[in-house]
Image (cartoon, rainbow, N blue to C red; front, top):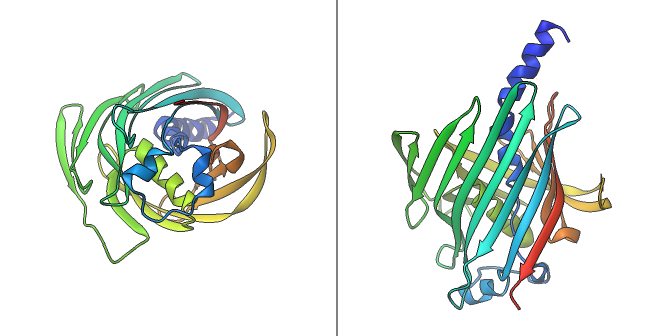
Length: 275
């Protein structure tokens, strides 16, 4: 590999940790019961029937055809009340490529709001090591439209406007985990186009998602899977996601459509449901 190509690969590699973290977190844990329900607005009682299962996920990360890392994730629902609408999520991942080693940790809290009819992120914390090292915490307002972000020692504030006239747009500020929850809820409600926002470390990211088509993909462990293909059509138009109804409508594959395409595959999925 000549110097020019090495530089290109290195520049792409520097973006692997945040990019793959973004791709790998587009998943969430409803039970399969949800598939049979045509949902409009959900009451707290109704949502409770779908959130009794604690779930764990394992993903493998590939770059330039080689396995470069993994991501493990656990979701635990709070069953201390009659309606389990609140969950905590713990994630840990590692990426190793060439001389670059990075780790990713995140702890987040999320809940479904019957008032606003979508998920909310009260707060989350994140830590990255390696060339993109940082520590970040974020606290959101009760309506999700404003946030206080501490990046290392710097404090910033962000404010959203809620466009009530656009039923495709949910203006709440999400972390990666809650963003994945809301994407999946939108799919299960039959929405084929929607806009969501993520609170990043230094700005607010806007995502415009569209359901493209059903597509059969070949999985090394599960063989041929008929999946729902979702693409980002805004400024992050290279993001492509595949969800499998055979696997509880979970994300089974994600990638960037670019020269050096990082790919994330689901390799293990487990759930333990309240009896």
